Image 1 (cartoon, chains in turn orange, cyan):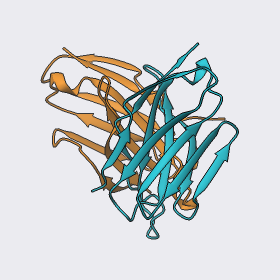
Image 2 (cartoon, each protein chain N blue to C red):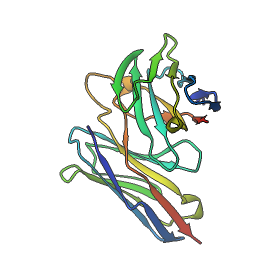
Image 3 (cartoon, each protein chain N blue to C red):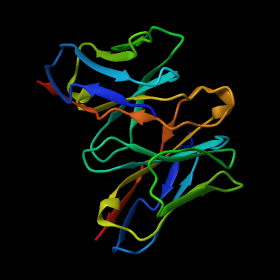
Length: 114
Length: 117
């Protein structure tokens, strides 16, 4: 079965640079979530989109932005990168129309800021 | 917003024994409570979930209980095996809101479960 696809899987950037992460949800899933997980930490919710509209906002820094496109894929844009942005970034998708609440996580994108 | 507390942070049990992890939540509107297992550097994987209209759910060696009044829920793993060793996260959300939309999960801090052979 198709899963959530994230790219790139690994990314190394310098401080103050920008980075873009991409997420392709499971086909027919209408909702995408972004989470940030630092080393030894729990995943922190950043932002979600339902039917291409921002749905919920968590602890996403102002330097970050995201959107969901017409084909339901989503991109997380991170600017003015800081050392503390080094983390695993997970995208998850769900079918909110069913109201099940179950999230399916991608493999994650590991961002290292030097 | 929602706040989820999880205990213990580390749990070591003998192989074959049972393990119990407990979580409390603060938002009475939360209605969906999943549990995730995460191995180092891997994605969280859903192992069981429970909705607010149910008090208990079981899937083979894994069970979850929910007490809405006390706002706490627990994960029970019986007959533990070495492959159960991982970090376990509880989470809560108002996932099933009637207006559609997608509220994010609030995770607990995680429990590092160690199965001693």
